[in-house]
Length: 265
Image (cartoon, rainbow, N blue to C red; front, top):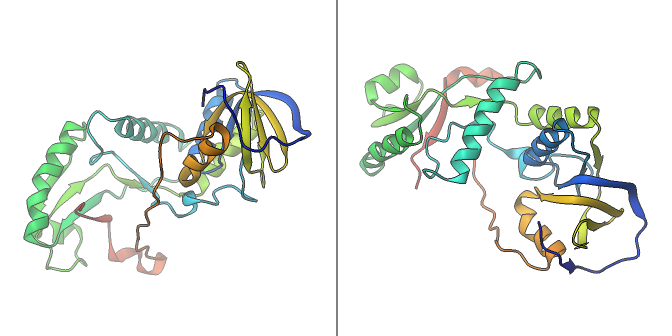
């Protein structure tokens, strides 16, 4: 956010902190916690504000837990760049932070001819994205890799680099490392508006006002609403979508050996 606008109801508020923070991160989901960690470790004074009573209260609490290679991301996109960087950084830091990593791999399964026709293009896209070990396999090789899968599968794509992590411990550790190094978090603290005087932001929240030099909107599915509250308008609109995952407990873990994915529609 870099617009010198004043929006929202301007309340008479006491300051929540007397400090002028370098960065205020709005939202304590996985992205907000990761950004707070990175800026804090770079020496910035960081505050995280979260409208819920605890972190990971939004979409982050139900994410897929997949460490994604980006095999199906749009080529040369910001999305692909972020996925690559996040993947690389997690591999570098997970051992030192005690974070789990299960190198399960993944399979994209074609159950009919229409889906099978799409596999070649997905492999080509993966190779273009720099994921060179992605390849198409036949039903026999798939049944060897996944013996409990229904034999009606025609073929599949194997993606060896896909992995599984713990979707909760990573952001908790990210934020904990930020807090240990001087960051602050304000929970039950919803941003309701703000103003920019040309050099500093003044954010109004349900708990008081905060001053900072930079605001980073990490509000997830509420990101457009935060922009509207602070800037008066949003340059984007979020339409939430809900997906479904089947997660086996430990007793049934042996039924699959990898992440099973559908052909994108």
